[in-house]
Image (cartoon, rainbow, N blue to C red; front, side, top):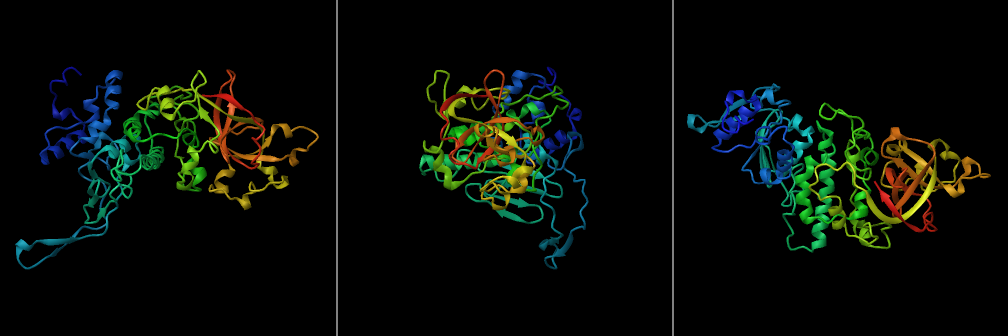
Length: 456
């Protein structure tokens, strides 16, 4: 490594790195940043320092090259490996040679390639102001205002970036600078949820990089965003909300870079505790409900019992630039109720209201929930002599990971009037998240007193 700090032979670089330098030279760009070369490998201190400043590196770059069509650094990216279905046909523009030709061809795919499946690459693309993409079948240039494709197609983006996924106008918002601060925060929150949804659809070679690979975006988001504490807890596996489009989530699996099992990388209340697409449904109409004390049923609390703000809560979790957070215990006050779980097979014998799948009034499609759902019966009503099939269902519970289905009892924490979290109580008295629920009986929590809760 010491020798490479002084100089090295270009021939020793991978083909992709050599071609990146070739492109930079052709464009007259003097300096090139390549993560694999500019971040000291196997040096945790340097890796952490550079990871936290990715928004400066890519945000201030003149241009970012996306080697989209290359699955590995050794393969290169300038020459496409895919053959076009037909060659371009030159059509003369006139009889004189200087008038040139118009080349007509079949449309080319806009697919970028394998890099779209990588979480690190998603952050780098999102942070960049201008990108040159070597896609599967064509080259294209993209910036905040538009995209120009090699086949002649062009797309103009909205001024706030909302029409240009996945390259959004990264925080802070680029429009409505004179808008009310609360409106700007809501805009930023909606954008953050969209970023998390896109981010969790991609893969990591090292599952422990879950926070590191999005840390720079989170840093920028924090400058504008004031996260609403309860809303952030109500994430859900995306396949449960959008039937048939996504695969179920699972617990993070070991990999070559993280061989230990199990992979403990995030507290249970975080979306990072599962591996796979998650959704944070944003409802414009209910935005104000999370700021209304009559609607929000839980409050964060510090160890002394004092109410805390969302900003203090983030600081207590060591800040948004924390690269590794396998554990972080939240302290809160809320209403807890104990319930017994029943399988869905008994639903035909139960006096259900909106819990009947045929009368479903919730925005989540019933078929998507059925595999991971269970019926919840209030524990105080689950004793004899009431037969099992006649017990009153108080809520529909949905597990985050369906394979963790179990019969027994679960604790339910009410977050907002019709939704909350299913929890398991651990031996040390704290709780961990195992899923979420939809309330069937609105008055179930009325008799529950507020208690101190530790959510790990």
